[in-house]
Image 1 (cartoon, rainbow, N blue to C red):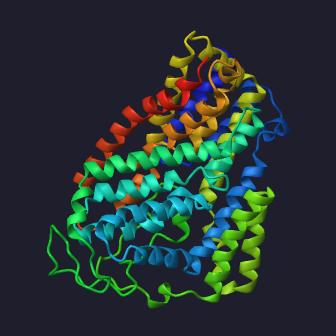
Image 2 (spheres, rainbow, N blue to C red):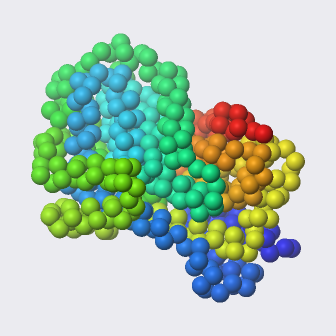
Image 3 (spheres, rainbow, N blue to C red):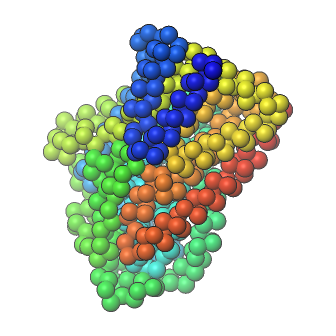
Length: 463
């Protein structure tokens, strides 16, 4: 058996073990990099560590550090309250508000599971309160998070764009962002129509301080909607909420739980945090500064000014996600060093039908991502596709966009981190039934979206 085939089989084993044994895939990948590098490829430690993504490490630590401070001082809660009040209680708009909130959070740097952990408890409590389908609300939250997930300063966007740059592929950050945004927006629109969204218009506007209109349970066991207008507070904002570990850290609070009045007003710390988030966007987009270094700098400034709010922020950095990404990409670096990527890419290209190879890669990304890490599979698939894309028959930008969309829209699956958070956050539901609904919906997404992404993003750029 060739060394290249052994390294590919080891990668498969890493995915299988991480999925079935709940072990961090990054830790497994580091071990695999050591084993394959030393025993199969005869690489020394320096050659193995050459693939360590130091730039992405800083991005991951920086943006999650800044966002942990935003959670700690209540800035994210304030944003949720303000957004809900903008629609003045219109029930039909609430799912779209949740879509926009999670999209905005991930677009400015929140890890997708962290954004879902923050918004899902509030969104699902609103669903129970006003008779909205929990599947509809959960899907809107997840697709919102993925819709904003590929902005140039986001975690996903930084990772994919960094991989594209290192592999010397043609790239377009804005095209990647818009492709994911529009794909998830269209899916959300379809879900809204199919799962009762149009019927919500008949409920009209509910007074922010009036009784709830739970269509399925009545209002006898529901309290008034608090003056803050956002329902219960999320509890998944601790250390686990931003780690992306796949554990059910977001536990829904009771729909009648009171909000903290302080979350509805701006404080100096929140104003400074909002200013920092805007400054991060401007620094990266307008001045082309490094997102990770800029985020760490802003986080340090906030920590110095308000140490009581940021005392635990370092512990809430998404260390599990950092380990995942750095481990997987280090192993990919070993694959590159030993020639596996070129070997595999030539094998895919050797199929002889470029369009068939492209759609197969999209389905591989979707299927694996439904049970494992979206970021991990993107970190592996894009480099594996490099030799295939180098042939020039398939447009690299469209292919990267198709792979990114295929590997992330399936995160509504209950086996993924985001799907598990939605399942955990839903109050007053039959969880087994809700689990089956999420599983069926996730299966439909896996079956349909990769083909559509391939047809829209890859086929027009063929030849």
